[in-house]
Length: 134
Image (cartoon, one colour):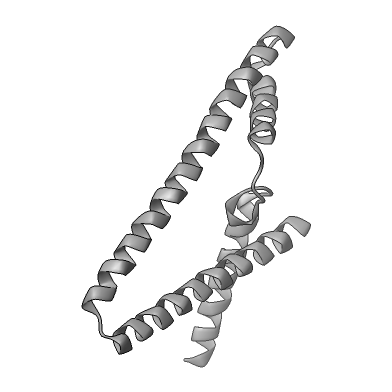
């Protein structure tokens, strides 16, 4: 029975590593945040290769890609601000309902969840680095 459990665990580990390797470099949670210019440049280069763009088309496509990359960055920043305001408003409403003890426990639970998410991201980055180095 123990051997069977061990075999299943090893197979699950192998499958997980194979999935991470198959994603390839620059994919998943481990990539750093690129500037709109870097995003537009990378996207343009890929389109140039895939679509055999002429030099004239490449310049025009890069301008379009940069325009939309900058707009996307602005949208992400706006959504982050909205999310923060939304969460703050929620916490203020909860304060009117919860007792001091419940509030403290709620804060502890939220902090634990936050740490858990950080650890998952950290482990994913390490896993991606390991997969990319092979």
